[in-house]
Image (tube, rainbow, N blue to C red; front, side, top):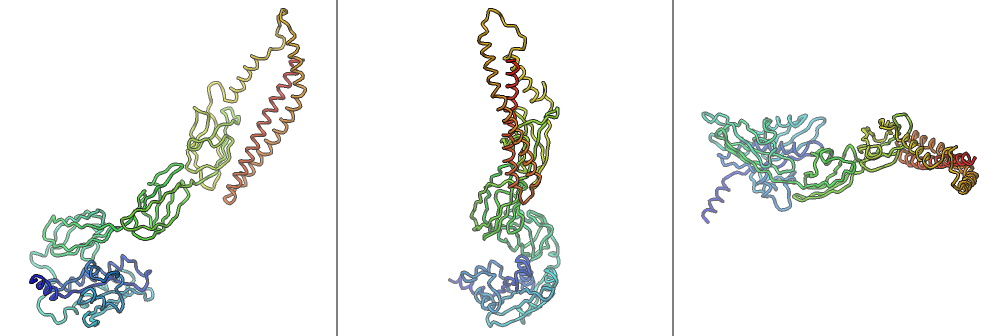
Length: 508
């Protein structure tokens, strides 16, 4: 009980001064981090003018937050309730800065209240073009401003270091986690924009503050008294995690993504750290259509976004010719799957791995497909041993015909009955009488379909624009299909015509 009494007496003897968060008339005037820095500057000036050895206590941000009533945030303390807020947090004096706009300049107005009588003790105002100018205003006016708290106090106050204490030391600063930026006594340390680091610090007591994205600020007061001193700060996590579960149908990786959260580019990864709240997220990749969505994340919680990315498409017009210059038909592949045959006109993913040819001689195609454009490309088949594919087919057909059809003038043994031969000749002639006109009709119809729809496919391709691209590509594919049917009919009709003519010659 006696100990508690002494503690209460000690608390009562000290003068507690609270510097509340800087507020602004409009959020557009100054960012939260800049307002926070101005608050830290005011608090640092208070520490200098109201030292602890004179029984003054400058309340930290955490002290103030802990003393506030439940449900009230430190940012809510402003305006006419300053003195009342000071009473709530048991402060003897309370100060706050307000930022406004005056023409093209930024204004600052700082007030100091004695909470017991709700009396305005001191104030100052100033103008500046930016935050740096306002910092100079604070430095110039704060000493006289905070001396009002001391009133008529007499005696010598130590405000600096002298004699042997007037020296600097090299200290090692580290944070957990690493990578935080450091400020000392409210001033950013350019030599330590990312911890760990070594810096020179004047001897004496200093306030260290470490700041890292998605973490609460960590701060502490340390007395620097020698070289090699270790100073460490722990930052508490203040983030949620957005897990990206994406499918890349035509290849790609998370490292190639461009991820933005609320318009700000963040490191590319399948795990994105975001502050608690609702955020606009955009995902872009050179091979896929962009994705946009909103996500709400709680502190220390995870949310998962699952999506199969849609490939960006471009146009391809691909023909193939043999080494001899003849147009040939070869299968076309995209990412290992057959998508058609040459001549090919259609859409392909801009990042697809294209290939052409009959197995096992499939050749990769290094083509630069561009979204919204149509690439015209002609593939020339390398020379093959024994001639081109088309020539080998014709040679094989000739061998088969020679093996199954007797040459004209071949002798027939007299001891073999020729009745079957005569019957065969009569049958061939009969077949030729109806095969020849039918083949001619099929041949003519096939030629007509092939030529007409070849021209139509080319016209659809030429008239394709970014507005009607998909529609024209579908029409071109349909024309290609009918054209291929026509060429097939032409081949069948031509074969029938040749057979009918052969039958007639053989019978003759």
